[in-house]
Structures are given as C-alpha cells and as structure tokens.
Length: 214
Image (cartoon, rainbow, N blue to C red; front, side):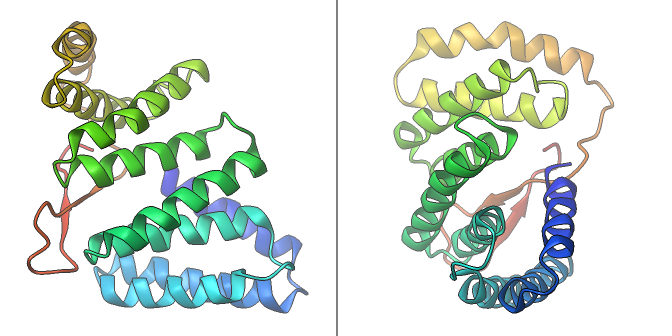
C-alpha cells in the first residue's frame, strides 16, 4: 500500500510539473528505478534512483519528490551494504518529509520504520528502538493501525524484540498481549506488499531478504 501510494503521489507531482525539465527527468529515472527494483535488479535500481536524485537536487523539484527519491535510494544503499550512506539519506528524507507533510504523517512514520529496520536487521537493537518507538506512537496517534494491519503487527514484533535485546524486558512484555491478539485476528491474512529486510552480514552485497509476512 505504501509503495502504491508513493507511485500515485509521484504521478500527481509529475503531472503538475510536466513542463519542468528537472522534475520530468527526476520522474523518468525514478520510474526506471522502481521497474528495476520490481525486476529484482537492485544494483540497477540503486543507479537509477541515484540519477533521479541528481536531477531532484535542484530548487525546481518539489520537496515531496526529493524526499521520496532520497527514501528509495537510501533503501537501495542499505541493501548494497552502504549503511552510512543509507542512514544519511533516510535521515535527510525524514527531516524533509517532516517539513513537507508535517511532523506527523504516514510518510514520516514510513521513514521512521525504515530507519528502525535498518538498525534492527543489522542487530543494532538499541539504536533501532527510538525509531520504532516514534513510528509506533505516530501510527497510533494517526489511527493508521488497520491500514496495513499485518505490516504493523510485524513492526510491533520487531519493536518488542528490539526492546528485549536492549534490556527493556518490562516494556517488551507490555506489547506481548497486543501482538498475540493481532496475530489471532490476522490468521490467513496476507500483507499487501512485502518488506525487504536488510542482510545482517552483507558479505554478498546487494542482498535483499524478503519477509514472508510483512
């Protein structure tokens, strides 16, 4: 659902700025990146998103499009084991999205969860906790829990695991009953899209590990 919304948002932005050369080229390379990613050509996706960012880095490109391009390039950098670059791109995208769509939005929560996942999948649990905490709190505040119920339950499970690994057993236990209840309600349910998990070791580079549930 998030991926679909992002593409639809991009289409609207592109339509509104069709005469803007920089925006048109950003959209062209961005679209090539999404097609490469869908075909599991992850190095290609990284290259296309990178080209899109070059065109997006101008004052003539809408901030929302710049944020979206940084977000997707950051994800690909993470899957290419370039974690420092991934973190900086995701953090910049987060800050830009907060100024564009407001400090509390579905787009902001998406970036928070991605940052949490980047640390969590590398087993840096303490570092992942603040991002999961903010993301979960934002989803609850916006009442978005049921927009992507299976995905949100998986985020809660990651959050609980991270808390436990970070030594906060009490707070982790406090999430247990909610996670169990949600899983019972979701028996047989499938996520609307698959989340690409980051490789914990990255010995092979460009490795995407897809979760079967989220």
